[in-house]
Image (tube, rainbow, N blue to C red; front, side, top):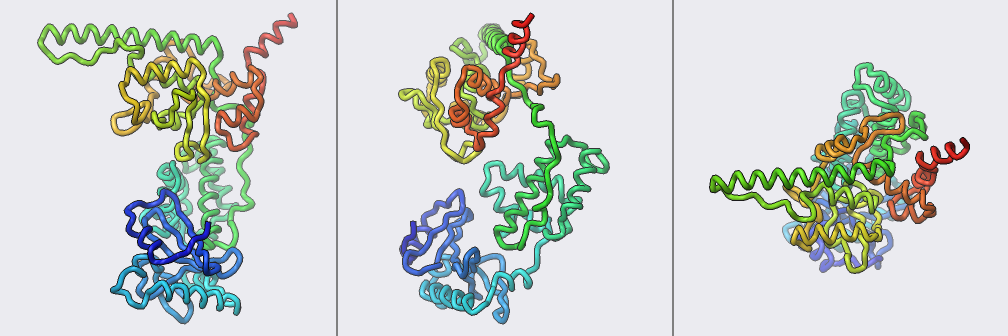
Length: 451
């Protein structure tokens, strides 16, 4: 909603001490086209809308911005920050001057001046290595790690895959033919680490997303990889498969056996310590011996992604209303999602909360912050349950299989596609369609009925 951009607002934004997780934009309610952005870095910059789809940065020779704005006939100018307006040591930069500068740039735009195009000519299109710089506030690399939950890993993927091949090329020089040649080498392992078609699609998709941001920022006039298509993959082959009912029962028994073994080992260890006068370790005689079993049970009953489950806090859990409310900052689609709790999930959370003795913080705390991985212990339980983890043609078994199992079970009992989509947090209904297929168990039963 537009609001008046005045000195009190600037003071509030500049001196609040808090910075937004994402870029926040405020449009002035009095002057058309005048706006400011509160950046994750804490900076508050001024802009003017000079035409449809075109904005100009308000800049001054004494501005505090790091990247120069070059305009023909004016030399190097620097983006103006709210602190420049509030700083009396810079008497030339006032809010009145900023508003007048907006009007001047809008007037020149009406007269045919295009400062954005001139800046591109003067500044030039950056090389990929510079565009991915994570220390430059004006670069994509810095933006990515500050605005995306998995930004650090995404940036590392792009750098690892493409800097050696394309790092010294300007963004508009990265053509579909070059990327196609890179993909061929990657698929065949020629000079590059060999990868599957699915992996190369994720790699090239990350690069295309980076160049899309360059188009959005008006660094590029057109996307150089707009015509590049992902490699064809087997849509019916799953990388990760679900657990069947017999495997679920085996997994639960293996978890219970593991907990009994851990408790017995702890009892024996404490007996040994007591005999020698050592401090005893905490007892494991509660409902759960450790975090693995409740985390597995909750994932099976809610279908949460691993990151969502491990980032879950007690504040997100409403035991009275029997629901988990996942806020947008922890979900993949950045959309708040509610997951009702059935009797089993509710009992798991209640027992775990009582055992933890805490109603705040993370549901599954780790050494520093929340839990990050249970891969080793989960794989050992799968092996103990006799569940083959390797890909046998249907897909491999991993933690994500718990989520697949949840979705598949919903489809088997006749839950409609839209309800499954909402419960699992899919952005696209097409993703949900795979859970509506008949399970392998039901396929076998149908064939056997013909015998």
